[in-house]
Figure (cartoon, helix red, strand yellow):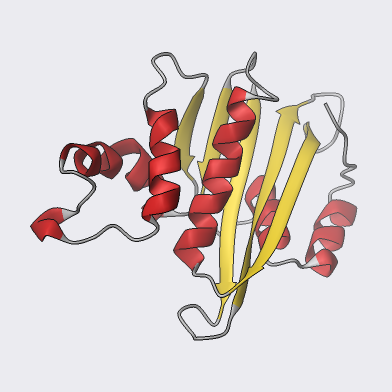
Length: 171
């Protein structure tokens, strides 16, 4: 089973000039290693003039793409600390589609370009993935690694890897 942790971040969220990013960490269980898994793929991207929700959605979209390309033969669990992303994918997006891509009271959907791309993954009949909510900043290693990638914190990532004797591997 593949676990894919996703996270997004934006410094000065909503400010005219800001920066943000998203991170994705892919883990696979490996009982021979301490702490019991290997990191088989990581990805991060940094952008200017963005929002936290846009970065969370971008991380989710990247993870969904991985489930249908690199990990198509595997059962995948995408784990996000964003209630917005998890609720959007598992619930809201279906109603938004039925309502011609509007929210309640005919309000527009923010980041509709990303939402519509994510919708394509909602339509998969027998998906090899699920999306689950995890608590953020709760010392869950996969989530902490995705956060370090999202915030472009090489220092934080290096500390997490060293403290837990984790090496990066590719599958």
